[in-house]
Image 1 (cartoon, rainbow, N blue to C red):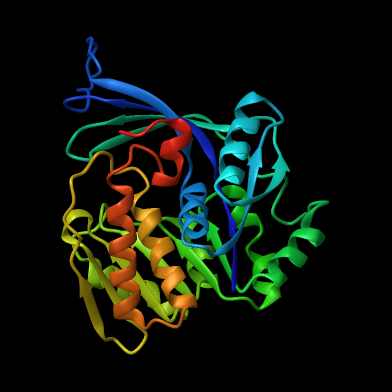
Image 2: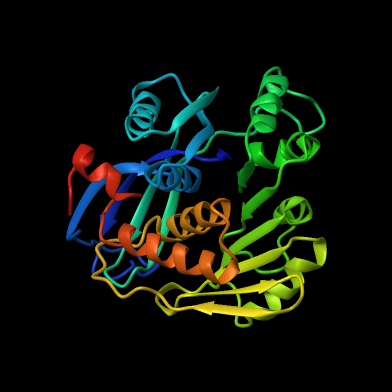
Length: 290
């Protein structure tokens, strides 16, 4: 069974600091820094491909050295990349601490290709690619948001990752309404089960909230609660752990796992990514191991 992932891929510089900078003028010194592939959709596609899942990543990249680098690395580890041309390739500067804290600065971000009410010239072929997949993953981006009606028209299950959704952000609403499965993290809530319950009002079969070092919880449509602990491992970098959890859970789902088994598979796959300074250990040989 195959997966089509739609959303961001980027080129990132990660800077490790002992603490995040205070909001005052001053000078800080990095412990180290490195460049790597980024983007939540790239992370999910890398994880799925590394698990042996047939995966297509639809993303916006510019026809430039950075865009070619991102595409080449993803394809080298088995991701089929379908590019929507953009004027810029997304780039981030991520300030990190050893405790996993992160401040992400978007240096470049591709816009939606056009107004949401106007079909794009590639929408027909993209719809055909979506219909050929068994599951669609639409990640948060203006272009993914524009394409939600195209995805829904295929009748394929739609999985979404709402990241640090707080239960109120208007941008996330169309994703909630389209989703068959919902993932998010607990960064913006003190009541994760309450937030999951609110998300399920729109018809998804289940919703999952990752809790970092505390593992993950889930709520299914019948109201049953589920929990899985994190797998304890030495942590090199937390970037991509949530996407790896998502990929592991989805891969297990497509193999017939139930929700508790999916959570366990997600936690196991995320543990492997925590030991790499890249979105997935599959990139270590290409970009340098920790």
